[in-house]
Structures are given as structure tokens and as C-alpha cells.
Length: 102
Image (cartoon, rainbow, N blue to C red; front, side):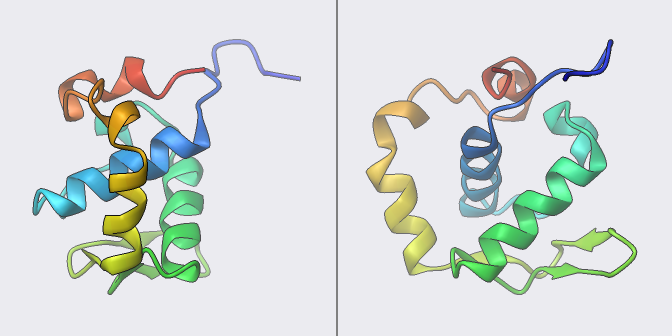
């Protein structure tokens, strides 16, 4: 059940947006820039780190994260390349809010 006022997001697109922003050297974006809840960004960062797509991110027990030292690594670059058709529609953070909605 989706709570009233809460927008459902596509997890894959959130992950791709994070990878693209890191690939572009942007390590300063926040959940509000993507138009998602803090826990959605935390979960995505943790997933990308655990699965070996990025390195250097820190996700804390409190649910907070730090991506200031995060970088996309080879597996993440390959993932972006594999999804290049989908990424053509990604217009950066300004358009991310609509792009990641389901």
C-alpha cells in the first residue's frame, strides 16, 4: 500500500541516477535533489556499495550516508553502459524527480 502523498520510485532508476551523478563527479547531491525519501537514497547507496558498483561511500547505522568520497568503479561503469538506452532519457538532477517516478 502506498501512503497518500508518497510517490513510488523506480529503484533501478534511482541507482542509475546515483551512478551517473558519481560518474559526472557529483558527490554532493542529496535525496531532495532526486525527489525521494532519505531512506530510499540510503538504501540505494548501500546496495551500490555492497554489490560493488561504487566504492568509498559510507552508510551509517543511523541511516545517514556520506558519498563525498564515493566513486563509481568498473562494475558500475559497465552497468551504466549496459543501460545506456535508458540513460539517454536522464537529463541530470533537474529532471531526475520525474525520471525516477514509477
